[in-house]
Image 1: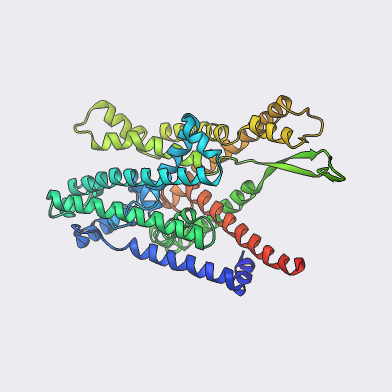
Image 2: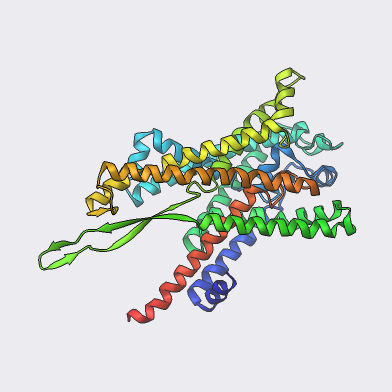
Amino acid sequence: MLTAFARAFKTPDLRKKLLFTLGIIVIYRVGTHIPIPGVDYKNVQTCIDNASQNQGLFGLVNMFSGGALLQITIFALGIMPYITASIILQLLTVVIPRLEALKKEGQAGTAKITQYTRYLTVALAILQGTGLVATARSGALFQSCPVASEIVPDQSIFVTVTMVITMTAGTATVMWLGELITDRGIGNGMSILMFISIAATFPSALWAIKQQGDLADGWIEFFTVIAVGLFMVGLVVFVEQAQRRIPVQYAKRMIGRRSYGGTSTYIPLKVNQAGIIPVIFASSLLYIPALIAQFAGGTSGWKTWIEKNLADTAATPHIILYFFLIVFFAFFYVAISFNPEEVADNMKKYGGFIPGIRAGRPTAEYLGYVLNRITWPGSLYLGLIALVPTMALAGFGANQNFPFGGTSILIIVGVGLETVKQIESQLQQRNYEGFLR
């Protein structure tokens, strides 16, 4: 990885793209520390210092915003509204024929779906911003803080609307910055910003482990956690790179006096074909009942049961339900993102076939069979990665939002591998250019 970056900085075009990406990252990190109007920044910092590290309900969103959520800054919502909007549009593409037709139209249809994603992102930002402001005004954002109700001193309608508009504009700006990286920088902009948000919480979380440790002033716990994290990263890299390659042979075709085809290739089916999406889906689904319980008044039985069994990430019902939701969504997302019949039809159209398998329906059935077989270990791997590090690190005082948790590792490794692949592919294009001339 370091070699790829070193070679990239020696290439003028790639150096400009890398520096542009770094500049956008700096702007993004600065925005995560600028408080929105109407917030008493001193009281916010007091509550953050006094609060426990386990923020429970808001922990996931705070992680994706790089810690900006609990500081109530202009980028407090981070990239989460865009992620949610993208997931919703992907699901609607399967349900709504119009969106499915747009998806098949190529670049023009993709641009239209991207525009719909932007509109939905702004709408979700307004809803989430309103919820965050209401939570901050009521003091529920920091329940154990004595000055939590004084975070928003002026609770007039004008100030409230200004705060919501500011956070919505901040989300739109984050979305724009991500698209700038995609167009003029290196890698997928949204993924890069998500990567930076999670990585920004590493130093403080690691230092908190050291301060809470008892063995040799916490240094043994500190280096043990780092070793466990490195092991999990290596495991994730190994599985993320694993794939089943299905050989495909294309028959020769004579057009005039020239022959075309006759080549061999393969269809790469990854063990983790769904990526990080099942974990995000499962986390979002479990987030809903906890959110309802928090804003419900009184001490009813159902509210107590949700807080004890679903909102508490260490509870056995939460762990079991979280695991099975990840497995379910892994199969669900693979089913909507990979269509064996469509792949088989395209192969038949261009004269391709799998050796030993007849073209058409038998090919589709074979692809579906193989995909189902490799999705099982992939889904179980996602569930274990999402749960095992959290449970193991809990003994060292880490919470469910610790950077070496399953969700963080999957995102960081996935984005890192994809970014390095893009850099290496562009380096290869420039190196081969000299041979083609």
